[in-house]
Amino acid sequence: MTESKSLENGWTTFQLRHQLFSLGEDFWIQNAGGENVYKADSKAMSLRETFVVADVNDNELATIEAKLLSLQPTMKILRGGKLSATVKKAIALFKQKFSIKVEGGAELEAQGNVLKHEYQITSGGKPVATISKQWFSLDDTYGIALAPGQDEVLLLCAAICIDEMAETPG
Image (cartoon, rainbow, N blue to C red; front, top):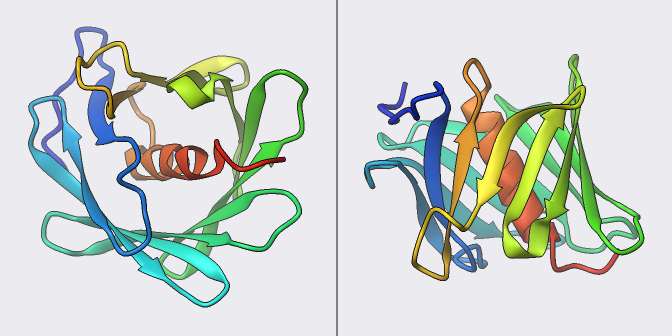
């Protein structure tokens, strides 16, 4: 388990650096104290983009796969080799929306100003994660705050998927 700092309301925060998600680059997800807690290793495959998310001891926690040639941008989150969730970019006029279908669970929705990293992920209309650049002075850094009791690996992977798909047409 990670040693993440919590906000007063019980929400746990992490920080990511935007535009570090490129093929062949590794990047760290840090807690609010700036400590590395998860590593995402980007791997180039033939027809798909893949990220392996691991803890600080290199224990694989999840794999994110994207088909590079797809009509509707879609990424899959795998855990233990099994599908855990599917993230799809929804077709919407004037705003970006994403659906996150959790296997055997609820369907989450992400919407807001995704390109500016100001959006929420909701479940049944209730926020489970808030993504914002306003918490940081660095241009390439944004934060993710997770509600208590949430699956932090799943939601962090979903945020990586959304960041990857945000600038793709569709």
